[in-house]
Each structure stands twice: as C-alpha cells, then as structure tokens.
Image (cartoon, rainbow, N blue to C red; front, side, top):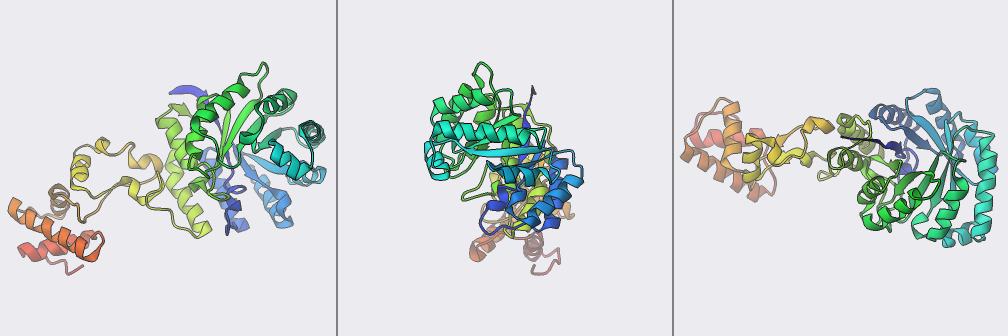
Length: 380
C-alpha cells in the first residue's frame, strides 16, 4: 500500500443536492453527515448562503462536532463570508471564475481584475475563519498561464486550491498534465480536484489527478450532482485502494449502506449495474461464471462482497448452469442424478425465456420438485 494519504472531500450535501429535483430534508442531511463522517471523509461541504433554512442546517451539523471538518462554499462576496462563518464551520471555500468566459460573464472583467478580487476576498475571509480554500471554477478551460499565476499568488495564503473541471471536459491524460504543472510550481499550493461527469470521465479524471500529485479530491455518493453529476465517491474510493494502492483511510464496508440511504433520499433506486453499490456487482447467473465463482470467487469478483458492504448472489435464468442448480438443491438436502439435473436446468431456462426474467430460488425448487417428484415447494 502506498504511504500517500489523500484527503477526501464529500460534496453530496452541497453539489450533490444541486442535482435537478433533489432536496434533502434537514434531518436527512444530519444523518448523512454523520454517516459520511464515519465513512472517513476529511471534509464535508455545505452551502449556508442558499437559504436561511440551509444556514440553520449547517449550524446544526457544525454543532455535531463530527470527525470531518465542515466547509462552507461562498461566492466572492463579503456577505457570503460573514453568513457562512457565523454558522460555525471549520473552513470556507471561496469560488472564483478561472476561465475567460466565466470572468466575462460573472464579473464583466478580465484576468487581472479577477485575481485582484479573489485576493481581496481571501484576505477578508481570513479575519472570519482560520482555514480558507479557493475553488477555481471552469479551470479546465482556463489559460494555463493564468492558472499558474493564481496558484503562485495564493501560495502560502490558503489551505487547498480546488481545480474545477466544471463541465467534465478533461481526459485523464490532460488532467494528469494540468495537475502536474500546478504541482510542479516552485511553491505549489495543495491541489484539490473536482471533476464533473458530462463526458463520463469524472472517476478516471479524479484518479489521474491523484496520480499527478493532487492532495485531495471531491466526490459525491452515487455520483449525484448537476447535469450528469460528479465523480462517484464509491468508484474513486475503491479504485484508489485496490487499483492505485493509495490509502485514503476510508471505511469502504459502509458504501452500500450510504449509497442506499442517498438513493432513498433522492427517490431514485440505485442502478443495479452501479459499481460497488448496485445489486448486480456480486450477482452471477451465467453458468460459466457461477461455476467458477463457486469454486473460487476471485475468478469473477475483484473484491470480497463484504469489503463494500455487499453480499454474493447466484440467480437463475436463461444462462444458468448445472453447478449453480446443483449447489442450490444440495443446500436444500436434494441430490439429483446428472440426467435429472439437466432436465431441471432446461426447465429453468425455458421458464426464464418464456417469462423474460430470472427465477427466485423458490421457483427453481418448485420446478425441480415437479420434475423428479420428491419435493413440494409449490409453483413459486
């Protein structure tokens, strides 16, 4: 395991809630904050200035004294800083436009004025909070020289400099190059990577950023967020540990439970094929796969199911093989001759095709009972 420790920033309660149609009730936010802190996130994000109700929720989370630090996201406005700091948060994140497009649209200004306003707000915020971070919005479409200028100007003044791939337009190769350049400055800032998933590359880009030296990454459970969402916390966390060998100090066994809670909160079921959180990740139907997994799970499972709070399932359908059926029947005290087992297999497959679905164990046992006449499980 690599000795490097990466700081994990969870923005499920902030950027995640910006997913269209999502609104976490205050009590659910407190519950999720507790669970995310226990998971091991170093920082949890909120945005108190959204509304008085959100500010009150932020105060309540701050009063919980979680192991995670609570960070409030602010625009470059003094009133945002004052209101956020009053909630008792541990850190402030000042969001500044980085690309020429964002500078023009949001500030009606150019790079020089944009940097001056940022530095002024950083100095102002320091009188209200001991830890100040800066987020460079749309950094992936900003001028590289300007990004370096900002980094140099902020060196030694802030905690984390967040590189925002706000439209998810980076590739892993470009991500690695850009983060590498920022980390290669004479006096580099600590870099946090924040990737969106518009092109389906948020997880890959986040891993590339960490490989390039990023000190922290931002993610949400189930990858929820604006448009196509953010980097998926469960995907990044598991890949970091088991592919990259980087220890982020996370309790991965809590993944399934937290993702389930998030899904319940947003009213959208966890997609069955969602990596590490979906029910299919440790589910096997194919005869070839089920046979191998029953002999040695490592053949078709990258991890033990319990690693991420899941369980293994063998299901029965069109591609079911004899070994899986034999295993189920033996678990129920039944041993069949090979030719009878083959008949059961064909009947199960026919049922699956005719009904266009997999079968429950009870249905399989019922079919077996009818074929060889020694069981009475009903019709399922």
